[in-house]
Amino acid sequence: MPYQTSSPLLFIIFNRPDTTLTVFERIREAKPKRLYIAADGPRTSREDEEHLCSEARKVIEQVDWDCSVETLFREKNLGCKYAVSSAVDWFFSKEEEGIILEDDCLPSNDFFRFCDEMLVKYRYDSRIRHITGCNLQYGKKWGDATYYFSRNVHVWGWASWKRVWNSYDVELSKYQRPEAERQFSNVFSEQLLIQSWVDIFQQLKDGKIDTWDYQVGIINFFENGLCVIPNCNLVSNIGFGQNATHTFNEVDRNANIPHEDLPAEVIHPEYILAETKADSLLLNRDFDIENRLKKLRKKERKMQIKRLLGFK
Image (tube, rainbow, N blue to C red; front, side, top):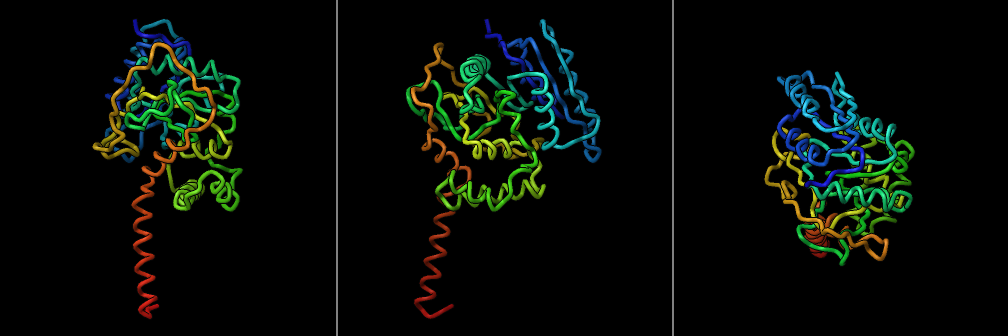
């Protein structure tokens, strides 16, 4: 028998009825007792999107287990930034804790068991702010426990508490660049990494990035929080491709990562500390730090040679 979750669940959908149905089938296996479904409205500039959104919303018709269902179906398009963040606002206005899945994040059945156990274990531990099912370490294990702690937050299938979401701010309104830049230097030692996050921060403040999730990560850095990450991958992103909002590259290494089995007994870490090497490995890869440093050193060497030859 598949594991049945005890946690309420928010399912965020939009315009992809195919992936929506695929993810919903896993939700159906887990049979949450309280299911919330949120959907952004269609964009008037996209032909046939109204039909696609309508088809995706029909997933509600397939709820065939004992379950209370609430919906937040937008008539007008809010965009990724506001549609998702307001959906999570809505969810946590009704629940103290729960699981959040988007329509392209395919969980294994073990994901629900993992989230349930972590939500209970760290319910009152303010050091722990997020739980994720997504592991992007490509088979590398960190420590002997079933999971490790990270300062990075992954939101391809995650869970959290109202106590954490209360500090979420989609506009990052209480943070300003000069102080934020100084605080990023307290989080990271590599200057290129600091500058990368400062650039993202400023683009978010300027409204140049239509997303909600960078804010989650930045606030977690500034709150000095930890994210629980399983040492096995429990969620696969099946949404890479031309119909995606942000993840267009179908051959991306992070696309369709296979599920792994969660051990029957979850072994907890002895120390509640971030695995800094795991974090560095991920961030250095995502921001291409090694290649960027090589280019900088090459440029600096050229400038030194020019100066030696008397060129300005």
